[in-house]
Length: 203
Image (cartoon, rainbow, N blue to C red; front, side, top):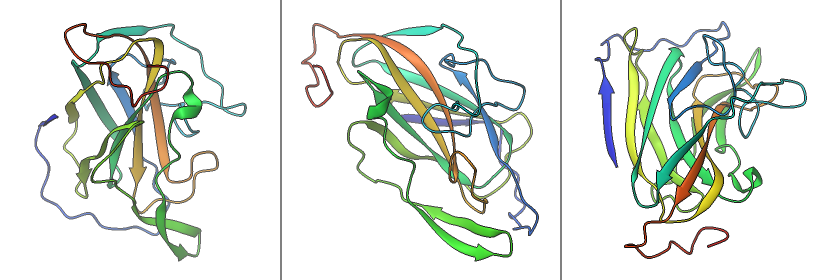
């Protein structure tokens, strides 16, 4: 897995505030499954940002990939919050996507605030990568987070990659606990030169 940060990080320390803060991000690549606004909404509800309360308009976009290739993830964090990102893949149904990370919290006059979230150092299906882009300093304006993540060698006509942002020092979201969510639909065709990854559903 290859990571890079486009633009530098500023050196100022993160200062916790008693006022509520809201982080938002946009999934630039691959193409999101739903239309989003300039700050990335809808993104609160698990697993893919929308719910019966928060509707969304599907884009109909499906990114075609070959099994075993690298999927390029590109994110723009438009409203800063400390934390990290996780990438997961569902093959047959989005119900396969994992629950949001378990959060350690502290109590405040405004209710529980997140302190940290559980990161799996050895992620297994359906998680592809965990703890990406961990940061506690505010990125410079127009910073993009980017990573290349290896896809399993599988066949799926329409599977879903989920990019989740876990936020530290954040109040409880009405629909998404301490995480925000974006998804993209993929069509993966297995590479015949590689063995099928049978740890994934339907393979």
